[in-house]
Length: 138
Image (cartoon, rainbow, N blue to C red; front, side):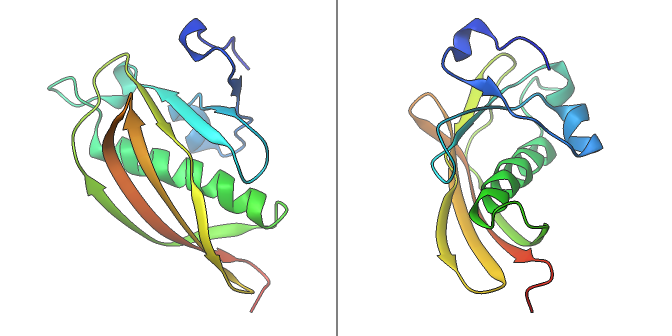
């Protein structure tokens, strides 16, 4: 774990366990279970040739943060992404902070419904809704 950047005072580093997530992280969080807010600092690994965050990175960030929220919602049971619907609104630039607070909108015995608006400051840059399967709950 690394030091939390000064511009993210009040956040702590999220403990990521997936090798791919560790490669693209770090991810930061604040708040308690089911109320967490996540933050991500765009660095050189995350941008395209125009210096704007790559759409695939935004989708990865959505999977990371929604997955953390899904994990919280089912007491860390194994979960997998079933579906993600996303809308790209504007890019984020190198050094900008992208924040999201995923929301659990519905839950059945085996499926979690989550959504989130990804923000830079007060502006939505990306929006996502996702479905998560709780493994072993058929």
